[in-house]
Length: 92
Image (cartoon, rainbow, N blue to C red; front, side, top):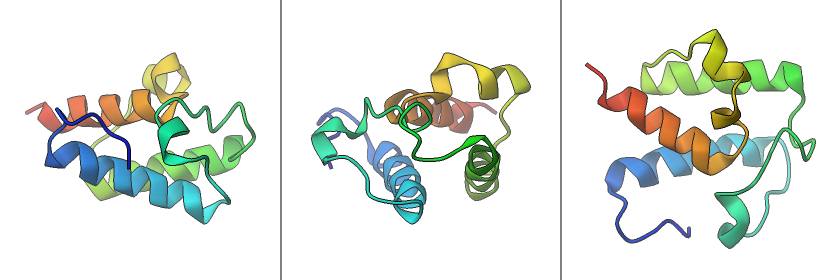
């Protein structure tokens, strides 16, 4: 796992869960490339699988993405998705 040293335990937990979901769909890039990995653009998951992927994240972490978040740029790379999940986890 190649997360910066400054990230906390929550980041590692989120990272591990997201990576595990992607592994279920096939081979993933090397850890050093994971944060920039564009899983949709690379065809790792299709649009239907993406809905299921997001639902599993929402269910696991007890969060909910808005429609604009689901179509926005922040869910297109693993790193940005993790950052968005962490923001939602910090919200009251």
